Length: 103
Image 1 (tube, helix red, strand yellow):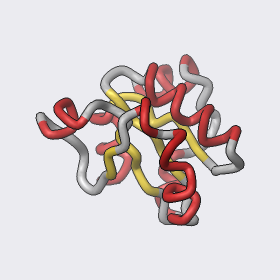
Image 2 (cartoon, helix red, strand yellow):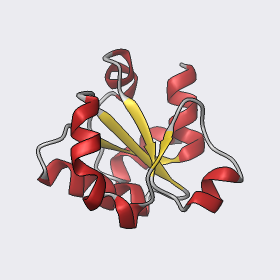
Image 3 (cartoon, one colour):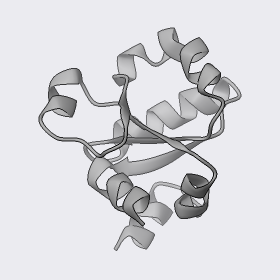
């Protein structure tokens, strides 16, 4: 099922390989959504705060896998990050991203 989601969201990358390179999972849901449940480990920067945190994210110097509730906001976040020269991938729903990390 997740392979189909990857294709629908335009992910051609092997996210497991990206994780093996030390990727950081960035959950772009609101603080409240994040606090109600999230993958471990992950960082939370809501989508509307991504632009103002570009310098911080660049400072991580790691690939970024974005996630959210459904994959829509994470897709937007990945596009924003890519436009700033950051290696970023849309991980889709946070539960999916959590499964990828756990391997």
